[in-house]
Length: 628
Image (tube, rainbow, N blue to C red; front, side):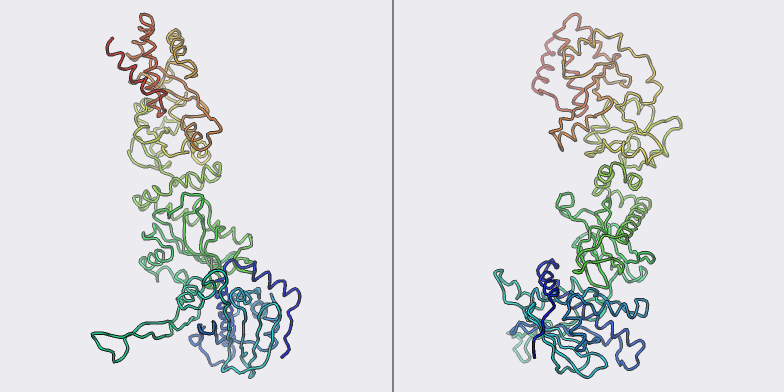
């Protein structure tokens, strides 16, 4: 039989495909099994209208056979088969898909068929691991079988042969191992093939069988010293029915949890399960999970978001990032859709409107589920927020407030009055009739913020303060302004909207004392003024408008080269005994007064969570006053 040559463009495409299109060699088994599934689906489709096809759906199957000695893997189906012309057209001309033509001729709406292949190149992925491929096929309705054989780009032969029954055998001669030990031989192991079937083809709708090895006691061997032998038994490797295809009422919570923990290797139950089934402009099914805790590496640059993507029961991608909204990048799960445009290797998505539509729909579903969890199971939501709240906040900051409307009602902040985490909505509901602002304070911890002197005046008015204690929280109020009905106001702002702030500014009355303080501290501070917010405390340090101390700390840690620095405004409680003692000492003992100034300044910095310049000097100064 004379060998036929591939067309020149087919040779180039085959070489490119084998070496470039597919990311992993193991994909070959997924592609060959998908082709077998297509062939069965075509015959099953015809059986709906052809009474001569004496086969029921349960009669169809795909069989894998291993011949380790001769390095052969055979994939057999009892589908529609191919005749000589189809072997030449489908296998002799690369990228000419019989499945695609079948869909065009019969229409997707006619019957229960789910053809996977469209591009006609998947078959050739087998050349990544095989140096020779033989195809033996007999088409339904014809008596003659044919054999197609090729060793790659040098061409192929087609000749008549014998085969019992309709269907196709794909026989792959596996390459010898190259520089990498066991590079190809691993595919000649039962457990490797079983693993690949479960990974990529677990939800193919027909049984995929393989003879698996088992150890058993030899018949007649002594009970005290039993002898064992290895036997092979045919086993179905795939589960066939995806859990996300089942109706929610038919699946128990335990089954969902078991699937999640096994599939995504998490020892904890998920916080929530979100089954989705939609039809319309874009049709898809999904099963999403909200985890209890981040997986390892979640808060690192190496973390990869993504959902498993399936098409017709075949896993196309393990982590499809484009289906996951950034705000909810922690979700795990699967999406199956026939409507997404794939490239010829089926490993990458074409970016289109359908893809974006699914992402947007998933975003709404996850938001609704989290909102429901917040309202119905506060304890569970707070546990979730402990692990993922920082990401929700960062999503608002990274989008410069674009995600504020989506996420603001999912945020929790510690409340000064409730002594627990509260939402912005709950805060607003409790606001007094005459309260103008949502008050907030920032710091490194709840305890340190709660002890800030600046909180005292607001607490005296029996008003609530939100404590923002996570890195970057200082920037949130600006981002949240558009999504909240009330304006935010920091406890350090000059105008707190309180009546007792309106008292006369007495800074001028103490000009000499304040000039003395400023002269003593020099450029350590920018301004000294009489405080309108201090009651029982003698001093505090504030930053005024613009850059705050929290912003300064944040940028010092993240971008120290920027040199971002907040103003230092020393606020003095002129009614406090400490200031009166300082003012008196300024006249009678200036050196002692300078010590008072430095002590008050360092105390103000400590309260604000700022480092003092010289702790030893500070403590020595305090001790020096004991003898006076």
